[in-house]
Image 1 (cartoon, one colour):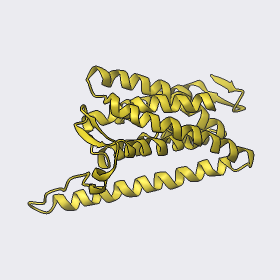
Image 2 (image 1 turned 120 degrees about the vertical axis):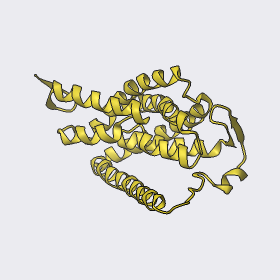
Image 3 (image 1 turned 90 degrees about the vertical axis):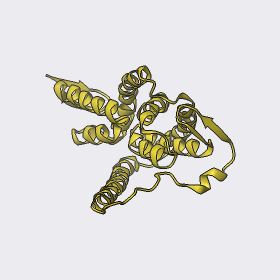
Image 4 (image 1 turned 180 degrees about the vertical axis):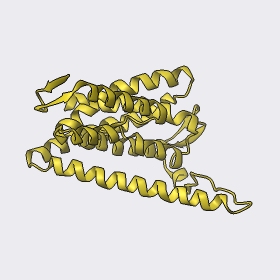
Length: 233
């Protein structure tokens, strides 16, 4: 059964739409990502205009992230204080990103920017993951090799506005999570992603958060950032 999408001006089989939503929703709850880095390119692949795909996926991410957060809240795996700081930065960044999105759309370059953004960012993420995997394999072959700490950033301890995040067992400056949230917010507006594919590694490697609370906290801030993008779009 095909349905007509008037804003996108294309017809799609309802089974494809439901299947894409279900698959991406599963990944959202499992890995703490909104799934936009998968869904938006897939929508474009199936003929949805890039600008429409970005705005539509931001809306879908809200729903998929809510269900994931509820599950993690029941397990106590959400750091609401850290999530609030990330969310504040994300709302600011996404508001600026929507303004940039509108400007690029007016000059007719938004489709090109969206497609290039995916090529660049997913390429960088893939290269970093490959590098880390190779290092892990080589390290495992060396007897007695000890892995160093993931977040030895001495410069971070010198930043002002320190806050204590009891759930994450951290005492760090709020500036870094605020900046990370703002950067991810811009990506959410331009690429139609929740930003979890960048947020989750940043929370682990830069902030040093325990992996047990990273996924739930990431999903928590994604809800509000993508909701802001949806309303502004």
